[in-house]
Every structure is written in structure tokens, then in C-alpha cells.
Length: 181
Ligand SMILES: CC(C)(COP(=O)(O)OP(=O)(O)OC[C@H]1O[C@@H](n2cnc3c(N)ncnc32)[C@H](O)[C@@H]1OP(=O)(O)O)[C@@H](O)C(=O)NCCC(=O)NCCS
Image (cartoon, rainbow, N blue to C red; front, side, top):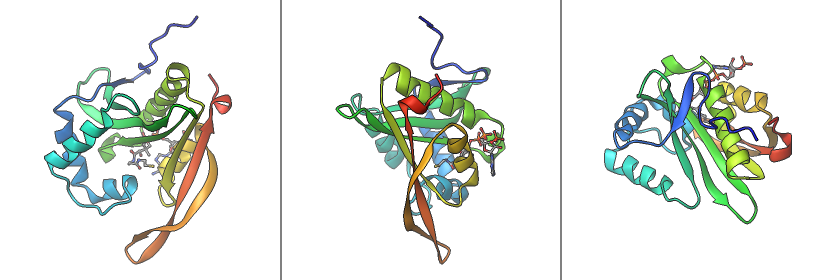
């Protein structure tokens, strides 16, 4: 049996969120570009209290697994990913990922973190199906998901309204048998 460390990649690792991480989240949420890529709700800064409630909710032990993404040589959180809303009877869950600062994007960290997250979901949690939504204008995220094997399964047509334009939200899914272990 291969007992490698599931949560360590070549350059990054998936760790537990730490209390201080909520301040990093708050800084990311001050950038409306980030929010408009990641969140369908209004792009406005979130208070610590509100973000803390979100993290506390994610830390409920039974149906979600949130991770802070950290470089091996650095304790700072560069991103966040999670497995959420798990339905244990069906083996399904939602996944999400974000690399917070634009300077850290396009460097392969998202690919590495997503691979670790998927491996954890299929090898450790024994899930059967992962799903996610992504906005039609988020080219980097679409490229990331398709390259890892996620299949476009549906379109929430004109689900977003931004700057006077409607945008689609895409549904992607990945089955356990489609993942190259
Ligand atoms: C989406 C996101 C997680 C991708 O992580 P990343 O570290 O930037 O991506 P990577 O460097 O691993 O690149 C993944 C792929 O996307 C491509 N890519 C990266 N930036 C791109 C861009 N701006 N436009 C098009 N493709 C892009 C890369 O070339 C790579 O494909 P390749 O291997 O074929 O070359 C990251 O950009 C991010 O967090 N964005 C803001 C929040 C967000 O959008 N989250 C996802 C919500 S669904």
C-alpha cells in the first residue's frame, strides 16, 4: 500500500485553517476582482465576525473539510480549498478553491492544491462524485478544472448579473472512476 503523505505536494501543502487566516481572507475580500471570480454574492468587504462565522461553519466536522494552502517554506496562507456539503449516503460533495493574491496565480499552485484535494476526497474520504460551479468568464478556473478531468455537465443560464451583463454559471462534475489515481 502506498502510504505517501496525501496532503503534501511538490511545493505546497494542505493544512488546517489557523485563527489568523481569517485576516488574510478579509484582505482578499477587499479586492472586488477576487470576489467576482469566487463568489456570486455582492463584491464587498466582509467583517472579521462574518468571515469567522463562515470558517466556523466550515469547521463543522461531519460534512465539510476546509484546508488552508501553504507553501512548504512559508506559513502564510496563499489560498484556500474545501470539500463541502458532503452527502455520505450518496458519496457526493462540492469542492472549491481560491488562490488569494493575483501575484500567486498562474504559477501552478491551484493545480497542485486541487490535485491534493481530489486525491483526499477519493482516497481518504472514499467519495464517488465531486461537483463545482464556475462563472463563464473565469477562464483560469475553467482551464484548471477541465485539465484535471472535470466534465461540464450543465449551465445555469444567465445566473449572474454584473455590470449590466448577464453571465452563465457552469456546473462541472468529476467521478471517482474518471480520476487517474
Ligand atoms: C482559478 C485558480 C484557483 C487557478 O489557480 P492558479 O494557481 O492560478 O492556476 P494554475 O497556475 O495552476 O493554472 C491552471 C491552468 O489555468 C491556466 N491559466 C492560468 N491563468 C489563466 C488565465 N488568466 N486565463 C486562462 N488560463 C489561465 C494555466 O495556464 C493552467 O493551464 P495549463 O496547465 O494548461 O497551462 C486561481 O486563479 C484563483 O484562485 N482565482 C481567483 C479565485 C477563483 O477564481 N476561484 C475559482 C472559483 S470557481
